Image 1: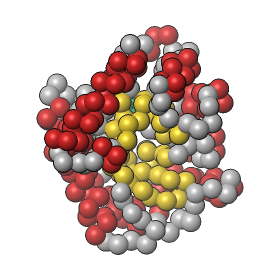
Image 2: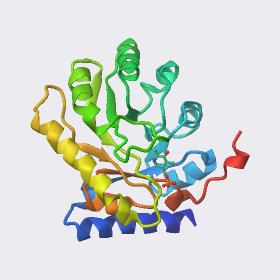
Image 3: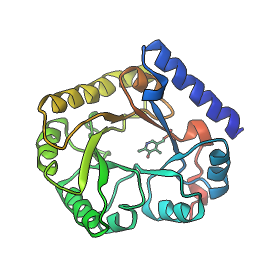
Length: 232
Ligand SMILES: *Cc1c(COP(=O)(O)O)cnc(C)c1O
């Protein structure tokens, strides 16, 4: 089942790329494996998946220890400052940086571990009260500020679009995130090249690709529905 679902998502990504005149290689699938057991991640790994997304620090570090070391882990959830130290040298990319305090902590912990943390700025484009992320107008000054940090590399932007029945409704949100990335790049800030757009989930990744997504984060579409009742 996982095999067929994964193949379907990959096919849909390819179709969306063709439809929008983009190269398949420019879009990377992140298999969002939160709440799923290690066996299921191993199954995906055996099918060739090497990029997994998790949103809880403890869950990520547990899975990190149990699974092959050539996996790229992406941290996509809200990150508390006191937990940065557990993942800063384990993850390929932190998608959810949305405050100076968090950026300062990442800088400090990355310096201790002698690594460079690659990060995305999370933007609450839809301005939903329930979501984390910065306001659109806060992003440029924020990026200018953290561009001076020597252990952080700002590589792009991330957004979580609202859950909608019709994914077309999210098109303006994805388009706005892409425009913001263009505006930031136009400023030619030292040490900043906003080339990653992490946007699109199971419900709307095809539309996100048409609007320029370079990472899509797909959980349910690959692994099936999440059962939070069984979660320890
Ligand atoms: C859970 C999650 C996803 C995946 O959601 P699906 O709808 O299951 O594809 C993507 N991004 C973030 C930030 C998430 O927390």
